[in-house]
Length: 164
Image (cartoon, rainbow, N blue to C red; front, side, top):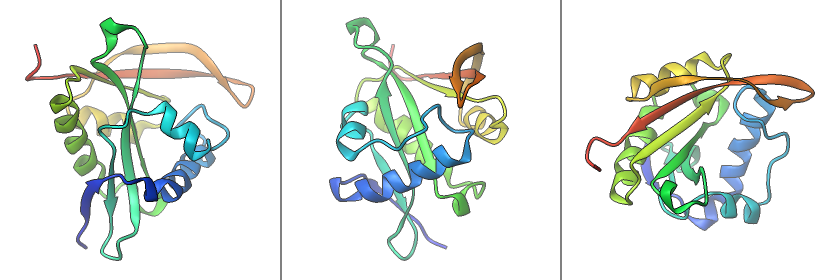
């Protein structure tokens, strides 16, 4: 099957949020329990570095985007990675296409560090990020609650090879 990687467009919002809902419903991808409105989602993520992957039928099957980790000027080049796929497209090796593009695009926009915070039970996502150059920084114990249960987060990061 052939896939097309392209920049995310405003008209993609509905499908992007549907895919995000799958992550919410899966229970191991995010602390979110509700899918935000398109307006709220857009305010949370940078306008740059947004990509979607389409199948042969021009249907979006995955997306990636970056969000700031802090509003402080000293952290303007640090962003958190979000990458989500429709359930039926997970585990097919397609994530690397999105993540590699996101890494290159982030560097062209001046980001020097990308980070990912992943639940420990989401072992596939941890391995996927490591395979794509992320290193494990540590585990944040009982950092937040999801549905009343304390959750840990594995923090991973990738430092740019080209930005000093």
